[in-house]
Image 1 (cartoon, rainbow, N blue to C red):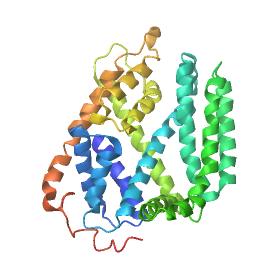
Image 2: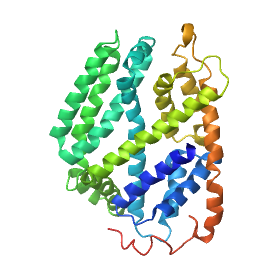
Image 3: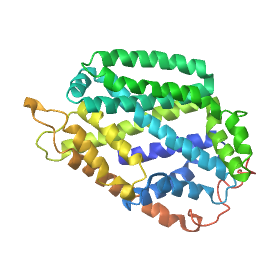
Length: 344
């Protein structure tokens, strides 16, 4: 499962990279991804974008002139990955509504926390809707989604006032996002900054141009949801495999895992070891098992799956050793360089 999880991440990145103009084979991207996974996970060197993403991008940049395209695609891949993670809480509300109502009634704090996650997921969706189809379409989408969410919240006693305030965050995103479009005030302002402004404009253009490919964007988004769902399923299987007094149900893991996994987005040393485990354990303790017993052992289940991930990531070590002179820290005129051309 872990190998499938990592392979799908690199397939998503490859599709985004190709759509942004990067001419790389799937094997080259897989090789760079597994090497980055090894350094980021097995060696506990993860500090977000500064480690795994940076190593993968550096590997692909060697012998290639489209450095801005690679960085832009890397940023976009990270954004879509986060958007997929933020989509899971909304799906949890839809699939397990009866369970979620009980879950939120037990803690108003978690209702507010979950409201923020749902608002962030909707914001990421409206960001691209506003870029592709304009503010009016984005605001209409916000009205439908926000109205539905408000109706659901109203069914949970005393939760509406705590969580409803987040619903205006996506509206702000929908109104502000078009500022990034080519020819806008932001682009004109950056042009006055000289070379740094040009680089920023190129990065923004790489991301914004993706709005013209809604099919690829939708597939990448769905793939991100599937990737995080696989990861969540792995945590559930880990909880069932170890001996804990009260094992969580799949729905309980679904509610607790996405917020806990969000801690891995933060640029924390050692890949945030201990932070995600604590968050997952805390959220699971809000749930109850048979007979009203509190669900415990969340930290052990999370850590078990992390260890499995670390061991599986060792598969990147032979890939790194076999890369030899064509590795990420060596100049090469190999694959991908002949079609890079001049940076546009």
